[in-house]
Length: 344
Image 1 (cartoon, rainbow, N blue to C red):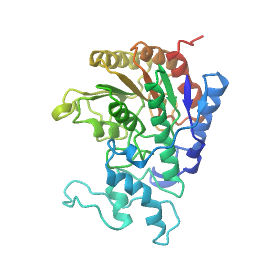
Image 2: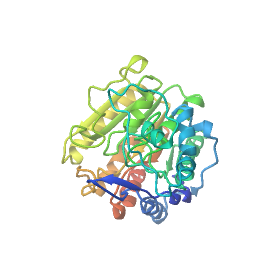
Image 3: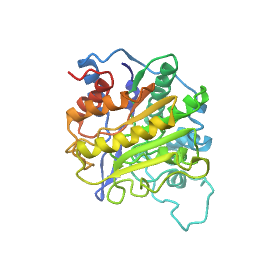
């Protein structure tokens, strides 16, 4: 399997507000480096750098004004004399009437974000573009006839909505990839999100559309991040009604329960008859992950890959979460090996 990877991800390493303190983010460069090392160890296949793309290639999944904000946020922040990482301090919660984008950077940071976990520093925009470009390159290789491609994206993307950052995510790599599939002529694209956390951003982007089916298996948002989306009754709206499927699972979920949910997800995707499949590949479902509470084990990821391959759809895997750095490479690559039938 081809892997698309850019070392530019190293330009971004942030902090986050967690447990009442500002601390180093769980989302760090070592995550991607560990996955890359495992790709090489098992001889998964060729590794290429992403192509360059225009900022306009991110528009469609995102709004033009949001992309412009991300591109300019650091320069606007430092123009005020500040050199620390940029984090929001106020958000437009329910009841505040304004829908206008503020002119000052502090207001913009809050307007275009959902939490204080996605800081912006000098290298963030370049790293974010390299991540999105990896997904776009993967789609272009799929369109040339490949059965499966792995976009080793970092930063991740599935919490980034049409107009907001969040959960370590800035550009929604999976959504940008799905949008490109549509622009290249696909009539129906499915996005399967198997990260522990609900892909709220991907849901937000496609919630009123029928040309992209979104299916997510994740921890129950009643008790885990992102809290405000991912419930089973969120089914889409307008033309998208019935094209959004959430399968929330309780704390302590092990492989038997996860496999049953993946079976249901796979049946929905099969009925949809997608021309292409984008998999938001998070492995924070692993037992002991520091910010999650499922109990999957490393061999389980081989089975997950087998089940995804059984759909028989050209598939782009887009790297999302997984925060046990020592195990993330083993688990992520196990999914890819399972997809290729290399389970022994």
